[in-house]
Length: 302
Image (cartoon, rainbow, N blue to C red):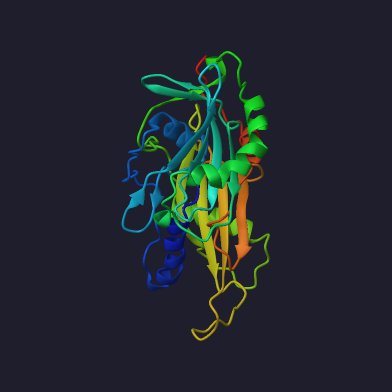
């Protein structure tokens, strides 16, 4: 999930990068562990939603992700709302199948839905204990039945259909997982940029990239963020209006960084003069993207 402030900071970097400074790096270990009361649900959320980071960053520190439990079925499944967006706009609805003392279990890629809800406030100013409940009530009512059906609500637990992760207070990915270089990211971004026919594209639009998920065979889901400054003004001067074109791509590679140029790139966001802090995606489209690239989950029964 995009964090509004994180992306604001990256937008600022668009300006300072012209001074030769490097972009932000989202591959670092989470410095803000979760300290809330729903550690098992938190774990389900951060490994279910591909771009979840697990905290609300606000520059000098962070808030815990917010969780509200809507209901449980007769077998212990839990349906809950989740938010880690400090800007208080992007919310998730998630189903956890089960958990024990050590692990959580859930159906991958079909157990969550995301929504964008306009808000004038950040989480820092919220004093209402029922805020998340009230904010996501309509979303819950509109989506709960579809999620329940896909996740076998009120049926016996079938762990053979589940993936499992150790209960944690921050998102953990294998530190040895292959990360795309800036050169590789620029090549991928520039290949997509050719389809846009921009009047003034940059040669090196890459600003940052991160690893979102890894499958059972080592395939990697990457996120790449790029910006073309002055994209519509080849003769830009300092007195001119600052314009920019934002691009967010998801790329699936093998463990060595190779990818299918036809099927391995998914355009998540592509707009001029708007940051991507408020984009959401459909879980079904992400699942189809993974299927096209032979993504393999490590199910508990395997």
